[in-house]
Image (cartoon, rainbow, N blue to C red; front, side, top):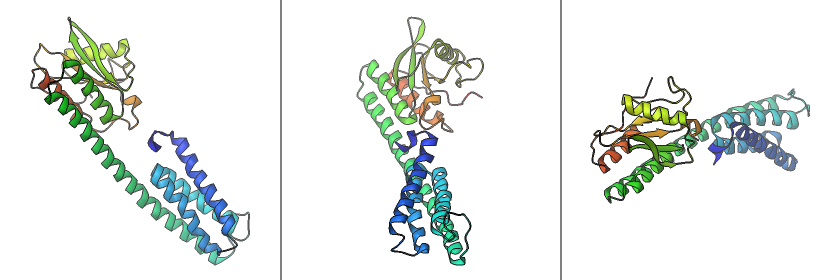
Length: 264
């Protein structure tokens, strides 16, 4: 859910964590010394790194050090530090918070990558079961579109040639199919090459399209709208598109796979 928040909201939430930590520090400042108060300002850094990643956690580091300096070191309500011990405490807070931020952000990144890999594997496994069970064509197509949507967290569509025309037969994620997308899908099918979104001559299309390489009797094109993806466009989406294309080709009597090279 945190990845779906706008970037500004992530930074705003990180600063809110620092405000809450500052309030807590005011409550307990008469119980502990100023150097020990610095530990309270590590908490918002950990929270920001865990929920929002490196950038917001770095903002929490800077905001936490400034808040500690302004409110809890003499002279108060000033960014000037008079006491060497307070200066040491502020510097130590900066170092500790930065180190914690890096470790927590890296841990979050690895956890997200592991979760994404598990989701992608599960999506492909679900599609494989539908194909193995020889379900009706419409169910296989819907399962393929759903797998693409789950893998890329982006709207997906599958075009098939029916009655001499290429038309969308399955989709997932609420794709917006316009005449520009239809033209791009036809272009991918005619050239047997992938078509990238917003690229000439189909610069009005928001979808990347890949033709599924199968016998001529079976015409199929896979499309994914990375402009509406919560994860952005991956570095090499072809590897997953090829797998889904291979399942479709196998299910409908072919043995090919989706075209593997992205359009330049």
